[in-house]
Image (cartoon, rainbow, N blue to C red; front, side):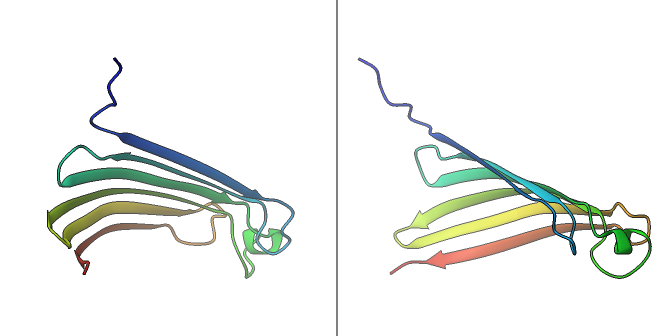
Length: 120
């Protein structure tokens, strides 16, 4: 007899592209995630988003508008079901935004969020 795996792992991914946008340039984005939901009150997830934009020729030459850029974000989520209708959750992550045109600024962010979810 084959038994069901007691610790399900869930994975997902999506990809999108946009072409020939005269104001933003070509764009692409990849979203990936992996969740682990063992038996019991805890669950975990690791997520990532990775994107690129070509930008407009005017902006990339130093003018105004959308410049060439890339953004990478990773995030770790955890939740704990305290009891009936009460869940504690939290996320920590980092984002890195890079100006690829040479005329803008790069940015890096580290973030964290905590949540108390009440269901009744």
